[in-house]
Amino acid sequence: MEEYDYEELVKATENYSPKRLVGKGSHGSVYKGTVKDNKLVAIKKPTYSSEVVHDNSKLDNEIRVLLSLRENPHVINLLGTSHDSANNKKLLVMELMPNGSLHDLLHVCTTPPTWPKRVEIAIRVARAVQFLHEGKPLVIHRDIKSANILFDSNWNAKLADFGLAVLQSDDQVSQLPAGTIGYLDPCYTTPSKLSTKNDVFSFGVVLLEIISGRKAIDMCRTPASIVDWAVPLIGELRVHEICDTRIALLPTYMEATMRRMLCIAARCVSSNEELRPSIGEITRVIENHGVVQRVRFPIWMSFLRSVILMRRQRKLARRWQARCATQQGEVHTHISTSGKLLLKEVLAEQYI
Ligand SMILES: Nc1ncnc2c1ncn2[C@@H]1O[C@H](COP(=O)(O)OP(=O)(O)OP(=O)(O)O)[C@@H](O)[C@H]1O
Figure: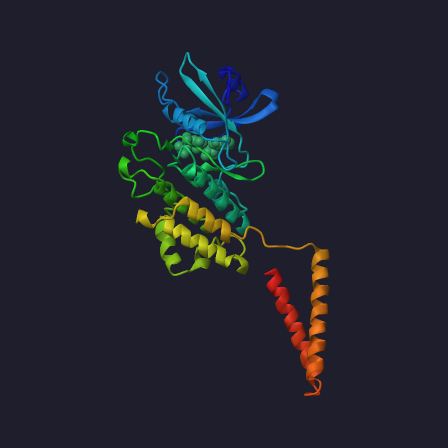
Protein backbone atom coordinates (compact mmCIF):
# COMPACT_ATOMS: atom_id res chain seq x y z
CA MET A 1 0.00 0.00 0.00
CA GLU A 2 1.31 3.41 -0.96
CA GLU A 3 1.31 6.67 0.98
CA TYR A 4 0.49 9.34 -1.62
CA ASP A 5 1.36 13.00 -1.44
CA TYR A 6 -1.88 14.87 -0.64
CA GLU A 7 -1.27 17.78 -3.04
CA GLU A 8 -0.38 15.34 -5.80
CA LEU A 9 -3.78 13.66 -5.42
CA VAL A 10 -5.64 16.98 -5.37
CA LYS A 11 -3.84 17.82 -8.63
CA ALA A 12 -4.74 14.36 -10.02
CA THR A 13 -8.43 15.17 -9.55
CA GLU A 14 -7.93 18.66 -11.09
CA ASN A 15 -8.83 20.12 -7.70
CA TYR A 16 -11.92 17.91 -7.34
CA SER A 17 -13.26 18.98 -10.70
CA PRO A 18 -16.90 17.90 -11.35
CA LYS A 19 -15.77 16.36 -14.63
CA ARG A 20 -13.60 13.98 -12.60
CA LEU A 21 -16.44 12.98 -10.25
CA VAL A 22 -17.42 9.30 -10.67
CA GLY A 23 -19.80 8.88 -7.72
CA LYS A 24 -21.24 10.50 -4.65
CA GLY A 25 -22.33 8.82 -1.43
CA SER A 26 -23.74 10.13 1.81
CA HIS A 27 -20.27 10.35 3.36
CA GLY A 28 -18.02 11.20 0.47
CA SER A 29 -17.31 11.75 -3.20
CA VAL A 30 -15.19 9.61 -5.48
CA TYR A 31 -13.05 11.14 -8.24
CA LYS A 32 -11.13 9.68 -11.14
CA GLY A 33 -7.46 10.68 -11.00
CA THR A 34 -4.27 10.01 -12.91
CA VAL A 35 -1.29 9.23 -10.71
CA LYS A 36 2.27 8.02 -11.33
CA ASP A 37 2.91 6.01 -14.52
CA ASN A 38 -0.33 7.41 -15.99
CA LYS A 39 -2.31 5.04 -13.80
CA LEU A 40 -6.03 5.79 -13.48
CA VAL A 41 -7.30 5.40 -9.91
CA ALA A 42 -10.37 6.25 -7.83
CA ILE A 43 -9.82 8.82 -5.07
CA LYS A 44 -12.34 9.00 -2.22
CA LYS A 45 -12.71 12.27 -0.37
CA PRO A 46 -14.92 12.39 2.73
CA THR A 47 -17.63 15.02 2.97
CA TYR A 48 -16.64 17.27 5.84
CA SER A 49 -19.71 18.82 7.46
CA SER A 50 -17.60 21.41 9.25
CA GLU A 51 -14.78 23.50 7.77
CA VAL A 52 -12.86 23.29 11.05
CA VAL A 53 -13.33 19.83 12.55
CA HIS A 54 -12.87 17.07 10.02
CA ASP A 55 -14.55 13.76 10.75
CA ASN A 56 -12.50 11.00 9.14
CA SER A 57 -14.03 8.17 11.18
CA LYS A 58 -15.81 6.42 8.28
CA LEU A 59 -12.81 6.72 5.97
CA ASP A 60 -10.44 5.59 8.75
CA ASN A 61 -12.64 2.57 9.36
CA GLU A 62 -12.70 1.73 5.65
CA ILE A 63 -8.88 1.95 5.45
CA ARG A 64 -8.48 -0.16 8.62
CA VAL A 65 -10.79 -2.94 7.34
CA LEU A 66 -9.38 -2.97 3.80
CA LEU A 67 -5.85 -3.14 5.22
CA SER A 68 -6.79 -6.19 7.26
CA LEU A 69 -7.96 -8.07 4.15
CA ARG A 70 -5.89 -10.05 1.71
CA GLU A 71 -6.31 -9.11 -1.96
CA ASN A 72 -9.37 -10.80 -3.43
CA PRO A 73 -10.74 -10.68 -7.00
CA HIS A 74 -14.27 -10.00 -5.74
CA VAL A 75 -13.44 -7.15 -3.36
CA ILE A 76 -12.33 -3.61 -4.24
CA ASN A 77 -8.57 -3.21 -4.07
CA LEU A 78 -7.08 -0.55 -1.77
CA LEU A 79 -4.05 1.09 -3.41
CA GLY A 80 -3.10 3.72 -0.87
CA THR A 81 -3.96 6.62 1.38
CA SER A 82 -2.98 10.22 1.88
CA HIS A 83 -3.02 12.52 4.89
CA ASP A 84 -2.81 16.29 4.97
CA SER A 85 -1.76 16.41 8.60
CA ALA A 86 -1.83 20.22 8.83
CA ASN A 87 -5.58 20.24 8.11
CA ASN A 88 -6.40 16.69 9.18
CA LYS A 89 -7.81 15.83 5.75
CA LYS A 90 -7.57 12.32 4.38
CA LEU A 91 -7.98 10.60 1.02
CA LEU A 92 -8.30 6.97 0.06
CA VAL A 93 -6.94 5.66 -3.24
CA MET A 94 -8.44 2.51 -4.73
CA GLU A 95 -8.72 0.71 -8.05
CA LEU A 96 -11.00 2.53 -10.47
CA MET A 97 -14.25 0.75 -11.31
CA PRO A 98 -15.12 2.49 -14.59
CA ASN A 99 -18.39 0.69 -15.37
CA GLY A 100 -20.54 2.03 -12.56
CA SER A 101 -22.63 0.19 -10.01
CA LEU A 102 -25.07 -2.72 -10.09
CA HIS A 103 -27.75 -0.24 -8.98
CA ASP A 104 -27.20 1.80 -12.14
CA LEU A 105 -27.01 -1.29 -14.34
CA LEU A 106 -30.36 -2.56 -13.02
CA HIS A 107 -32.27 0.67 -12.54
CA VAL A 108 -30.73 3.34 -14.78
CA CYS A 109 -29.24 1.65 -17.86
CA THR A 110 -31.48 1.19 -20.86
CA THR A 111 -30.02 -2.25 -21.58
CA PRO A 112 -30.55 -4.43 -18.48
CA PRO A 113 -28.20 -7.41 -18.01
CA THR A 114 -28.96 -10.80 -19.57
CA TRP A 115 -29.93 -13.81 -17.44
CA PRO A 116 -26.47 -15.45 -17.55
CA LYS A 117 -24.86 -12.11 -16.59
CA ARG A 118 -27.22 -11.82 -13.61
CA VAL A 119 -26.24 -15.29 -12.39
CA GLU A 120 -22.57 -14.42 -12.81
CA ILE A 121 -22.99 -11.21 -10.77
CA ALA A 122 -24.82 -13.13 -8.02
CA ILE A 123 -21.99 -15.68 -7.85
CA ARG A 124 -19.33 -12.97 -7.64
CA VAL A 125 -21.11 -11.06 -4.87
CA ALA A 126 -21.70 -14.30 -2.94
CA ARG A 127 -17.99 -15.13 -3.23
CA ALA A 128 -17.07 -11.64 -1.98
CA VAL A 129 -19.29 -12.04 1.10
CA GLN A 130 -17.99 -15.58 1.66
CA PHE A 131 -14.44 -14.22 1.60
CA LEU A 132 -15.40 -11.74 4.34
CA HIS A 133 -17.38 -14.17 6.52
CA GLU A 134 -15.00 -17.11 6.27
CA GLY A 135 -11.76 -15.17 6.24
CA LYS A 136 -9.38 -14.32 9.02
CA PRO A 137 -10.27 -11.83 10.34
CA LEU A 138 -14.01 -12.29 9.94
CA VAL A 139 -15.58 -9.12 8.52
CA ILE A 140 -19.23 -8.08 8.58
CA HIS A 141 -19.78 -5.56 5.78
CA ARG A 142 -23.09 -4.08 7.08
CA ASP A 143 -23.82 -2.16 3.86
CA ILE A 144 -24.30 -4.76 1.11
CA LYS A 145 -26.46 -3.11 -1.55
CA SER A 146 -26.52 -2.77 -5.31
CA ALA A 147 -24.96 0.73 -5.14
CA ASN A 148 -21.90 -0.78 -3.43
CA ILE A 149 -21.35 -3.46 -6.09
CA LEU A 150 -19.15 -1.94 -8.77
CA PHE A 151 -17.92 -3.13 -12.18
CA ASP A 152 -14.30 -3.10 -13.32
CA SER A 153 -13.18 -2.56 -16.93
CA ASN A 154 -14.01 -6.21 -17.74
CA TRP A 155 -17.48 -5.93 -16.19
CA ASN A 156 -16.48 -8.09 -13.22
CA ALA A 157 -18.51 -7.21 -10.13
CA LYS A 158 -16.66 -6.29 -6.90
CA LEU A 159 -17.89 -5.39 -3.46
CA ALA A 160 -16.95 -1.86 -2.33
CA ASP A 161 -17.56 0.70 0.46
CA PHE A 162 -16.21 -0.75 3.70
CA GLY A 163 -17.01 2.41 5.68
CA LEU A 164 -19.46 0.62 7.98
CA ALA A 165 -17.66 -2.75 8.07
CA VAL A 166 -16.87 -4.35 11.42
CA LEU A 167 -14.05 -6.74 12.29
CA GLN A 168 -14.88 -9.66 14.57
CA SER A 169 -12.22 -8.44 16.98
CA ASP A 170 -13.86 -4.99 17.30
CA ASP A 171 -15.62 -3.91 20.44
CA GLN A 172 -19.09 -4.78 19.17
CA VAL A 173 -21.01 -3.17 22.05
CA SER A 174 -20.03 0.26 20.78
CA GLN A 175 -21.27 -0.47 17.24
CA LEU A 176 -24.72 1.02 16.85
CA PRO A 177 -26.83 -0.73 14.19
CA ALA A 178 -26.17 0.81 10.77
CA GLY A 179 -26.88 0.13 7.11
CA THR A 180 -29.19 1.27 4.33
CA ILE A 181 -33.00 1.20 4.52
CA GLY A 182 -34.39 -1.53 2.31
CA TYR A 183 -31.29 -3.69 2.83
CA LEU A 184 -31.01 -3.44 6.60
CA ASP A 185 -31.89 -6.59 8.54
CA PRO A 186 -35.03 -5.83 10.65
CA CYS A 187 -33.63 -8.15 13.38
CA TYR A 188 -30.55 -5.96 13.75
CA THR A 189 -31.99 -3.62 16.35
CA THR A 190 -29.28 -3.53 19.02
CA PRO A 191 -25.45 -3.85 18.93
CA SER A 192 -25.72 -7.35 20.43
CA LYS A 193 -27.69 -8.50 17.35
CA LEU A 194 -24.72 -7.90 15.05
CA SER A 195 -23.89 -11.08 13.14
CA THR A 196 -23.03 -12.40 9.68
CA LYS A 197 -26.78 -13.06 9.28
CA ASN A 198 -27.27 -9.27 8.88
CA ASP A 199 -25.15 -9.40 5.70
CA VAL A 200 -27.01 -12.54 4.57
CA PHE A 201 -30.29 -10.59 4.79
CA SER A 202 -28.86 -7.72 2.68
CA PHE A 203 -27.43 -10.22 0.18
CA GLY A 204 -30.92 -11.75 -0.14
CA VAL A 205 -32.36 -8.32 -0.99
CA VAL A 206 -29.64 -7.82 -3.65
CA LEU A 207 -30.41 -11.26 -5.08
CA LEU A 208 -34.11 -10.38 -5.39
CA GLU A 209 -33.11 -7.08 -7.01
CA ILE A 210 -30.84 -8.86 -9.53
CA ILE A 211 -33.59 -11.30 -10.55
CA SER A 212 -36.57 -8.94 -10.58
CA GLY A 213 -34.95 -5.65 -11.61
CA ARG A 214 -37.08 -4.01 -8.89
CA LYS A 215 -35.59 -1.54 -6.42
CA ALA A 216 -35.16 -2.62 -2.78
CA ILE A 217 -37.71 0.06 -1.87
CA ASP A 218 -39.98 1.42 -4.57
CA MET A 219 -42.51 3.91 -3.25
CA CYS A 220 -44.40 3.82 -6.56
CA ARG A 221 -45.40 0.19 -5.99
CA THR A 222 -47.42 -1.72 -3.45
CA PRO A 223 -45.93 -3.23 -1.43
CA ALA A 224 -42.97 -0.84 -1.60
CA SER A 225 -40.52 -3.35 -0.11
CA ILE A 226 -39.06 -5.91 -2.51
CA VAL A 227 -39.07 -8.48 0.32
CA ASP A 228 -42.80 -8.05 1.07
CA TRP A 229 -43.56 -8.30 -2.65
CA ALA A 230 -41.33 -11.23 -3.63
CA VAL A 231 -41.54 -13.64 -0.69
CA PRO A 232 -45.26 -14.56 -1.11
CA LEU A 233 -44.73 -15.03 -4.87
CA ILE A 234 -41.72 -17.29 -4.21
CA GLY A 235 -43.86 -19.28 -1.75
CA GLU A 236 -46.27 -20.00 -4.61
CA LEU A 237 -43.37 -20.65 -7.03
CA ARG A 238 -44.62 -17.91 -9.39
CA VAL A 239 -41.09 -17.55 -10.79
CA HIS A 240 -42.04 -15.86 -14.08
CA GLU A 241 -43.94 -13.10 -12.28
CA ILE A 242 -40.82 -12.19 -10.28
CA CYS A 243 -38.34 -12.32 -13.15
CA ASP A 244 -37.47 -9.02 -14.83
CA THR A 245 -39.87 -8.50 -17.72
CA ARG A 246 -37.70 -5.91 -19.47
CA ILE A 247 -35.55 -8.64 -21.02
CA ALA A 248 -36.32 -11.79 -22.96
CA LEU A 249 -38.55 -14.30 -21.22
CA LEU A 250 -36.58 -16.55 -18.90
CA PRO A 251 -35.32 -19.40 -21.12
CA THR A 252 -36.43 -22.91 -20.15
CA TYR A 253 -32.85 -23.99 -19.45
CA MET A 254 -32.59 -21.29 -16.73
CA GLU A 255 -35.91 -21.86 -14.99
CA ALA A 256 -34.53 -24.30 -12.42
CA THR A 257 -31.58 -21.97 -11.73
CA MET A 258 -33.88 -19.01 -11.06
CA ARG A 259 -36.20 -21.11 -8.92
CA ARG A 260 -33.28 -22.18 -6.73
CA MET A 261 -31.88 -18.65 -6.55
CA LEU A 262 -35.27 -17.29 -5.54
CA CYS A 263 -35.72 -19.98 -2.89
CA ILE A 264 -32.33 -19.22 -1.37
CA ALA A 265 -33.11 -15.45 -1.51
CA ALA A 266 -36.38 -16.09 0.37
CA ARG A 267 -34.42 -17.96 3.07
CA CYS A 268 -31.86 -15.12 3.28
CA VAL A 269 -34.58 -12.54 4.01
CA SER A 270 -36.44 -14.73 6.49
CA SER A 271 -37.56 -12.84 9.58
CA ASN A 272 -36.23 -15.79 11.58
CA GLU A 273 -32.44 -15.46 11.60
CA GLU A 274 -32.07 -19.14 12.42
CA LEU A 275 -33.59 -20.08 9.05
CA ARG A 276 -31.15 -17.99 7.06
CA PRO A 277 -28.43 -19.98 5.27
CA SER A 278 -24.74 -19.30 5.76
CA ILE A 279 -22.94 -17.57 2.92
CA GLY A 280 -21.05 -20.83 2.29
CA GLU A 281 -24.33 -22.64 1.58
CA ILE A 282 -25.60 -19.74 -0.57
CA THR A 283 -22.43 -19.74 -2.69
CA ARG A 284 -22.60 -23.52 -3.13
CA VAL A 285 -26.25 -23.41 -4.23
CA ILE A 286 -25.77 -20.58 -6.71
CA GLU A 287 -22.53 -22.02 -8.09
CA ASN A 288 -23.88 -25.56 -8.43
CA HIS A 289 -27.11 -24.55 -10.10
CA GLY A 290 -26.09 -21.36 -11.84
CA VAL A 291 -26.12 -22.08 -15.54
CA VAL A 292 -23.92 -19.15 -16.47
CA GLN A 293 -23.75 -20.01 -20.15
CA ARG A 294 -25.71 -22.25 -22.35
CA VAL A 295 -23.28 -24.80 -23.82
CA ARG A 296 -22.69 -23.93 -27.45
CA PHE A 297 -20.65 -26.11 -29.78
CA PRO A 298 -18.67 -24.78 -32.75
CA ILE A 299 -20.46 -25.32 -36.09
CA TRP A 300 -18.03 -28.05 -37.25
CA MET A 301 -18.64 -29.96 -34.01
CA SER A 302 -22.40 -29.66 -34.36
CA PHE A 303 -22.10 -30.99 -37.91
CA LEU A 304 -19.93 -33.90 -36.79
CA ARG A 305 -22.37 -34.72 -34.00
CA SER A 306 -25.28 -34.69 -36.45
CA VAL A 307 -23.43 -37.07 -38.79
CA ILE A 308 -22.57 -39.45 -35.94
CA LEU A 309 -26.14 -39.34 -34.62
CA MET A 310 -27.55 -39.82 -38.12
CA ARG A 311 -25.32 -42.88 -38.69
CA ARG A 312 -26.28 -44.30 -35.32
CA GLN A 313 -29.93 -43.74 -36.12
CA ARG A 314 -29.60 -45.43 -39.54
CA LYS A 315 -27.82 -48.40 -37.96
CA LEU A 316 -30.56 -48.65 -35.36
CA ALA A 317 -33.23 -48.41 -38.04
CA ARG A 318 -31.55 -51.13 -40.14
CA ARG A 319 -31.42 -53.43 -37.13
CA TRP A 320 -35.08 -52.83 -36.39
CA GLN A 321 -35.90 -53.27 -40.01
CA ALA A 322 -34.16 -56.63 -40.10
CA ARG A 323 -35.89 -57.74 -36.95
CA CYS A 324 -39.35 -56.62 -37.99
CA ALA A 325 -39.20 -57.42 -41.71
CA THR A 326 -40.54 -60.86 -41.20
CA GLN A 327 -43.50 -59.60 -39.13
CA GLN A 328 -44.82 -56.53 -41.04
CA GLY A 329 -44.68 -55.46 -44.65
CA GLU A 330 -45.19 -51.71 -44.06
CA VAL A 331 -42.61 -51.45 -41.33
CA HIS A 332 -39.99 -49.45 -43.27
CA THR A 333 -41.94 -46.17 -43.34
CA HIS A 334 -42.78 -46.49 -39.67
CA ILE A 335 -39.15 -47.02 -38.66
CA SER A 336 -37.79 -44.05 -40.61
CA THR A 337 -40.39 -41.78 -38.94
CA SER A 338 -39.59 -43.04 -35.47
CA GLY A 339 -35.87 -42.80 -36.32
CA LYS A 340 -36.24 -39.11 -37.14
CA LEU A 341 -38.12 -38.59 -33.91
CA LEU A 342 -35.38 -40.35 -32.01
CA LEU A 343 -32.74 -38.12 -33.60
CA LYS A 344 -34.69 -35.01 -32.68
CA GLU A 345 -35.01 -36.18 -29.11
CA VAL A 346 -31.29 -36.96 -28.81
CA LEU A 347 -30.37 -33.58 -30.27
CA ALA A 348 -32.80 -31.83 -27.96
CA GLU A 349 -31.24 -33.56 -24.98
CA GLN A 350 -27.73 -32.55 -26.01
CA TYR A 351 -28.45 -28.90 -26.68
CA ILE A 352 -31.11 -27.89 -24.19
N1 LIG B 1 -13.43 2.52 -6.85
C1 LIG B 1 -14.43 3.18 -7.41
N2 LIG B 1 -14.43 3.40 -8.74
C2 LIG B 1 -15.43 4.08 -9.34
N3 LIG B 1 -16.50 4.58 -8.68
C3 LIG B 1 -16.55 4.40 -7.35
C4 LIG B 1 -15.53 3.70 -6.64
N4 LIG B 1 -15.86 3.67 -5.33
C5 LIG B 1 -17.03 4.32 -5.24
N5 LIG B 1 -17.46 4.77 -6.43
C6 LIG B 1 -18.71 5.51 -6.72
O1 LIG B 1 -18.90 6.46 -5.72
C7 LIG B 1 -20.15 6.24 -5.05
C8 LIG B 1 -19.99 6.58 -3.59
O2 LIG B 1 -18.96 5.79 -3.02
P1 LIG B 1 -19.15 5.10 -1.61
O3 LIG B 1 -20.38 4.25 -1.66
O4 LIG B 1 -17.92 4.41 -1.25
O5 LIG B 1 -19.40 6.40 -0.72
P2 LIG B 1 -20.18 6.51 0.66
O6 LIG B 1 -20.28 7.96 1.01
O7 LIG B 1 -19.51 5.62 1.63
O8 LIG B 1 -21.61 5.96 0.26
P3 LIG B 1 -22.84 5.56 1.18
O9 LIG B 1 -23.91 6.54 0.83
O10 LIG B 1 -23.17 4.16 0.75
O11 LIG B 1 -22.41 5.66 2.61
C9 LIG B 1 -20.48 4.77 -5.31
O12 LIG B 1 -21.86 4.50 -5.29
C10 LIG B 1 -19.91 4.58 -6.70
O13 LIG B 1 -20.83 5.00 -7.67
